[in-house]
Amino acid sequence: MRIGEAAEYLGVSTHLLRHWEGEGVIDPPRTAGGARQYNAQQLGLVTIALRCQKAGMPLPVIARLLNGTRDEKVELVAAQRDEILRQRELLNASAGYLGHVLECTHPLINDCPACSSFASGGR
Image (cartoon, rainbow, N blue to C red):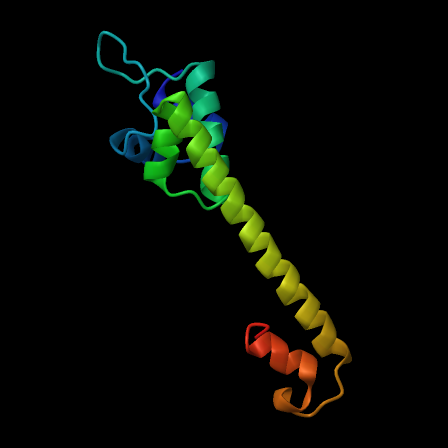
């Protein structure tokens, strides 16, 4: 399918597909006339790229993930997984703190040991 059809199918703009091509994220084959052709493999790569971007990966990392060697891919995925786990820990701590705040009766953060601990980063 051509770029317009692919963009519509994926729910993205043609500008995004062209931009990602320029950044080396994707490299769709072209017809003899130069038109981009998106096959099932290309659509799958764009879908993976979209999900990686939603997970916080920058485009250069996504490009290396999709086009790099096996060793590069393993290293990138491990690093991204570790970052997601770190963020999850921070979010869990924040959610726990907010749950505490809903129940906290202290008028000031400094009066509450739990609030003070969270504000100081647990130190």
